[in-house]
Amino acid sequence: MATLQARTLQALQQNQQALLTQWVASLQASGGSRNLKEEDLQHQASSFLGLIVAALDGGNGQSVATE
Image 1 (spheres, helix red, strand yellow):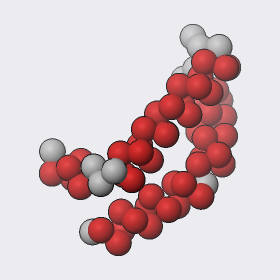
Image 2 (image 1 turned 30 degrees about the vertical axis):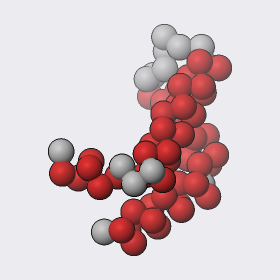
Image 3 (image 1 turned 90 degrees about the horizontal axis):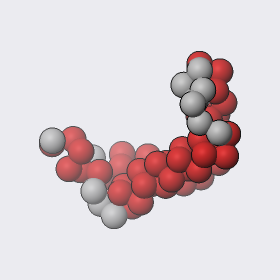
Image 4 (image 1 turned 180 degrees about the vertical axis):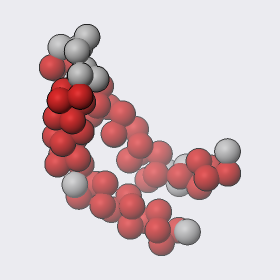
């Protein structure tokens, strides 16, 4: 499990900007962002993705599987 978590973390870190760009575009296309300004959506999505990466980097990913 640790190897999978390390590879997932590495993939997220290496592709964070591309993931963010595609995620925001998908939210905009689906109407999931209609009540947010584009800059707010970008900031919130970036912050959330950063928190996921930080949690995995801190070793907190294992607790997600058990809760």
